Length: 531
Image 1: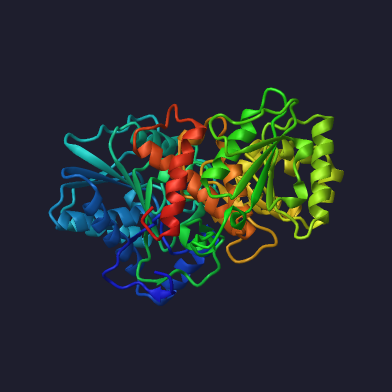
Image 2: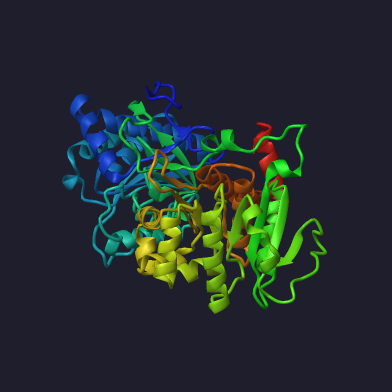
């Protein structure tokens, strides 16, 4: 669904496809609440809950294994959705039980109606005592799946007390869990989720929320489906972010024609490699070769520079002073660079050379280059004011240094932190981590995207160097900075996903193993094949 339409009755939900061509919007809690209130005011009472519960019933029936299913209903309307789903599943002949973790006489009006209808329909019901000292009931014999309807998107503080006990009980069941709207305990806006239910799949209502895709969200939400509930989709209200999907960058990828030569695809220099760290720029440079850069140079700070790369002799290795910076189409600066005086002088020189060049080659600033800028306000100001387009690729600690904050501050709201850093540094920011956030400055449509690809296999040395090289390769080939950044981040994560799906990782995958699947994925994108 690309245009805003009223979702047809036959479309109860649609998958959030990481490889999709639609620009899937992500909406915050305030917007979702406003949409809900408008719908409640315009529709007959109980309509929205009926739609949510009916969609959930069909969704659970599609994805849950055969056997007894326990639907857990909390004290709010999310619990009412679960109760409606239990009734519909029971009426369709599925074995279900609905457990209410609240007092039936304290439910809000629609949820109370859902409880009454479930009782009338003969759904096996259990109102669990609220005594926090009482043991939680064991899962019934033959239970094959749990449906989480404990908490919705209105969470204002971390789950504790009895609700935290329920979350632990669900996570310890060893059963597949299907979450309604959002896994209980997960913050919809930020992805913070300690504690939170870890679901195999989530059916989110009206629109997807950013917290499903970043920080703890990837671990908690599993596969994501969206149920528009018969409301216009995508919502007309502005999104806080979009999902980084190929539809957002595919048309900007550098095509390949017969009448070309290596000069048609740019020259990239990867600068870094101080003593003992020569591998870092080599990782980035090798990645750049595999993503199509026409020529790739490596400028080493360590003396003497290696004479050649025996793995990829196509690379041109130099003492950094011998790299013709003004002849480069793009530069990657920072892998293994170090943070000493020589590195600082080199970074200042590179910025000055790029600022004077016409056209100005874009910079990818990674690793030690970021730490140098974080510790030198004057140099950071020169870069910001130079007009040189640049990408910064911090992990949360590097982002905290750049913003003068803490890792906890960065992780508390990753979307806001990336946007603030983009504005402060006048850069495109890649805030790495689970659900990498990409933010651009100046802010434009799609200024913040959340990446849906990648997995824990990327938590190993060198994968950041590989990503920087991939971004640099696409920049060298002439892609606009935001598009090149989003494409490289997506391809990098997709390559890791492909490796893990094939049994390489997540434990023990190495950064250099990303090159070949990344090349395959880029070429599939270029030729319109499935990725």
